[in-house]
Length: 356
Image 1: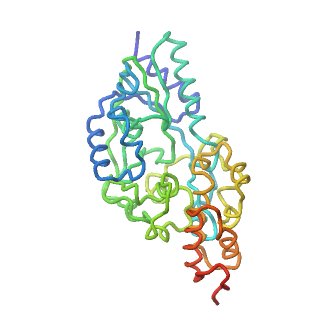
Image 2: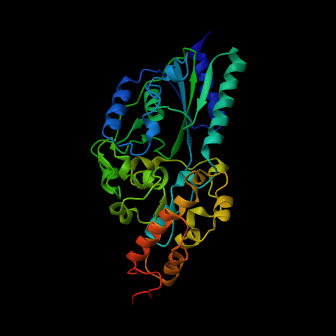
Image 3: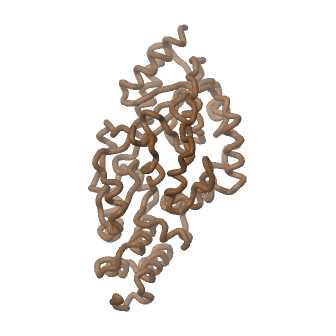
């Protein structure tokens, strides 16, 4: 079999399926495995226990999917046009939701396309072993993407490409055929520290070192309990994820807007106020987040995050009334964050009047 010709064909098929780039990596991730072990030993994963599970399966693809000798990596742009990122961040009455989750959940779309690519290869060469992944198993996706030449891991720990920035999703197909591998690219962060300097909670503790326990994406999505008080004010109006490190990265001036309709904003989530989202009842929350990655945090943590945002919003009768409406919520977690938010507006009791 002419594996070089097959590799080129795979890249063409991938682009026809909507991926902006396809590349191929081998499975030797020793350096990245060492980095992962140091990161875990430092406790930077916080409550993300799944990062420490599965032994070495995350860094040794052949242990996760026996027979794997190559990994086909893929990237797909997700940034919607005209989502007014800066304007929303600067308007503390608005709720900022990370731009990757404004549309439909990317997992199903990308996994479906990767599976289609895997089957296309099968039609061409006959039966072979393959398995597609999109955040669905212990996979070092950024390491594999870097290894394959899709980009380099930047100081903020996200993957960067000189012609596409970082506003893209990653996916992988583990295969048991010896395709030729692509050449990794060199890093181009240079002396830039924009992502480190801008991080609201200083979660990037050193270049290429992220303490997830301080990261707003972790606090609003992965953390199940109470958000540490010292990190609430720095969160501002960021209620689901955080894009600050991408927003300031110079390489993102080359980023392209998504071509996928499913990634476009739904229910005007790119421009909603904190108050209106906080006043959604659970049925509305479930209806408005159906098919969205936002659904994963559940209604209780949705209210928790929004309460923090309201605590950081300008004082107004509307904000105070919204918080008071949840002051006796059945969830202790919600009540705690509502009380904190009220105290930020100078109110220690829900019956107090707004200070003048």
